Image 1 (cartoon, one colour):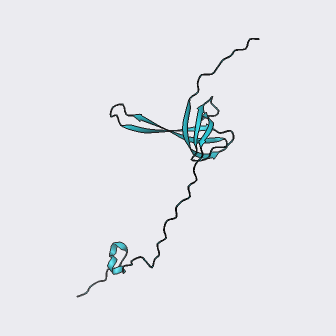
Image 2 (cartoon, rainbow, N blue to C red):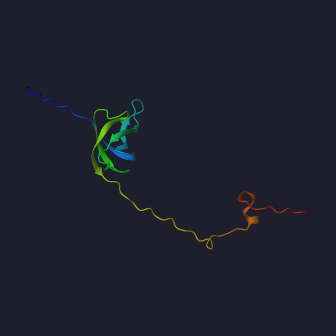
Image 3 (tube, one colour):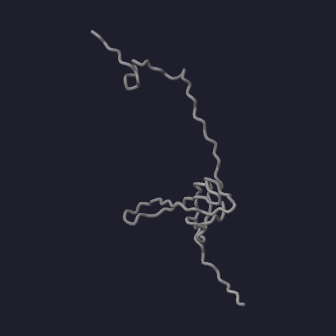
Amino acid sequence: MEQKNQSRGKRKERSAVVVSHNMRKTIVVKVERRVRHPVYGKEMKLVKKYFVHDEKDEAKVGDRVVIAETRPLSKLKRWRLVSVVRPATSMPRQAEPVQDSSTQSQKSPAESGPAAGGKIEDQQS
């Protein structure tokens, strides 16, 4: 028997950010690319979403990943996860300062006017 040493062509690879991880073994990523407008010359940012096969469920939302083109795996999946380049950074949210109601200057309803919900007293002369 003769063995054929066929090598596949170079598969396309893209760098992307994970935007959804709600399905089993599937992630949704967005790929951003910058393109110059053909007439006006302004640089535009084009965003495309891809459904990617993640066999080990290793990618999480916010991760920077590398994906590669592959054979069709389902109706929408034509890409597979190669590696997680940079995990998402879990930045703690900064608490907003709490305003104390005693330090706020409060106006009486008559001073605030009708737009602020105050009542206008009828002046009878």
